[in-house]
Length: 314
Image 1 (cartoon, rainbow, N blue to C red):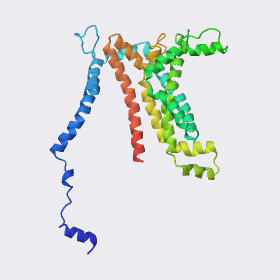
Image 2 (image 1 turned 135 degrees about the horizontal axis):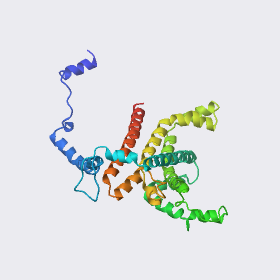
Image 3 (image 1 turned 90 degrees about the vertical axis):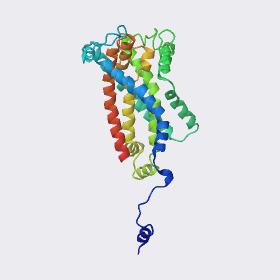
Image 4 (image 1 turned 60 degrees about the vertical axis):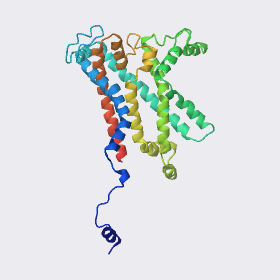
């Protein structure tokens, strides 16, 4: 008789039972619920309830000046937004805001990550200096850059005039042609740290054996980078880019602090426009625009989660 057969005979063929301490009973369920209920309550009160209220406002005429008269208007708020002459400008600005910030952030962050991967003195200090901006509030960054871009006493104009590049102050934030560029530059500086952190972590996960094998095959630094390193961390790069797209699109802090959407709506993006409607007391239009923004974010989030699930499965 085999060992397995003797073991089965010794147990009388009975089904194995989990230890008594691991049994899931009503008391355990109540304990788990007690621990999780504050988190559930927080999510319901601050996420789902505002979402439901906002959804109701989007299909009603809801203004701060007449809260007693909120008739159902169907898709009228959405139609009003789309028919607004400013709508195409806002959508274009939103795209320029995302792409103009994202591409330089990715390229500069990638180069910084490659540099920080090497071993050198005070590397930890340099990493802390590079990563520090990401720990600062975006609104505070906007205020700092608003002072730096100030046409009268800003540091950028001071440097340009001291070096003789210009004789007169440049109205960075008052000039419609320069305002969007200025806020994008501020956002680039702010977001480089995120890409540097994420890409550095991905680079450190690449096995050294792959680099050694590439060197034995005669691949140079660029060949190793494009044929070994980037393909190995490709999924991480794609996920990081998608996540950053979601954040930048839904990130009005810097623009709101620097220009408030001006001058002449040249820096107005979807989220700052939504804030403007809220300040004007038109909650119906603000909620409708919020649903449009949410639709864009949900689309990119679905793509992000699908790729993340694929990466975990592989």
